[in-house]
Length: 85
Image (cartoon, one colour):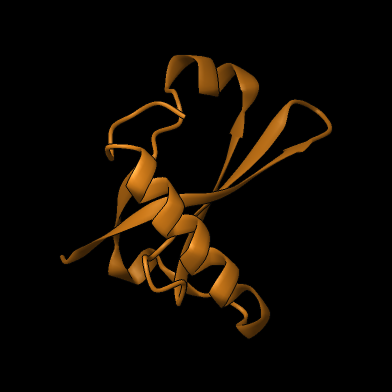
């Protein structure tokens, strides 16, 4: 199983203590979305990057690709993959 490094590009807070994390490939073409409770975030902090199995990646809508590529590059420049963010 092949994995791809993805960088945190978006974090959204929702009602009921849910947080949606979006990680994207450096080119902004693919994403991996995780939803976590705030309690789970305390137990397993959010890192700057995750390695995602290729079959778990989804295509990014055209209108978000450039923004995700920019955010992925910014996160990669500022953080090591295992840094808590």
